[in-house]
Length: 165
Image (cartoon, rainbow, N blue to C red):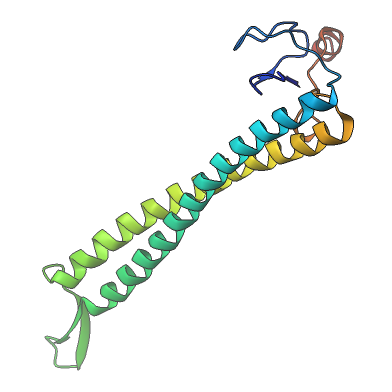
């Protein structure tokens, strides 16, 4: 993949004109072109950081609601004398307000925990990729960066060989 030095969008290697802004794509960058590209990528990285922070907030709120829900779950039990006279038995009373607080706490807390985890992981990964690309652009003075995690695009010859096996 290669970055457009004007709009900082990733485009395919074989494209000579950016489909987003129409600028001609050049791989070796001049010194004065590196800094604006890196600054634009840093802004995008900070945008993702805000979403990661929001996701972490959801995780904290969701965990708190789950803990409160579990506490209210145990509070919704009542001790009742058994019919056989063998002593006291704990019974879950679904008509008490504590049970409904438990139910709402677990449902909302679990939802926030899952959504927050998805935000933190997804946007954290996107931010990490951009930061890696920034370091590569600075080091190589080129807008061309390798694909993520060393994944290579399959070539037509390799797909024919694997299909024939």
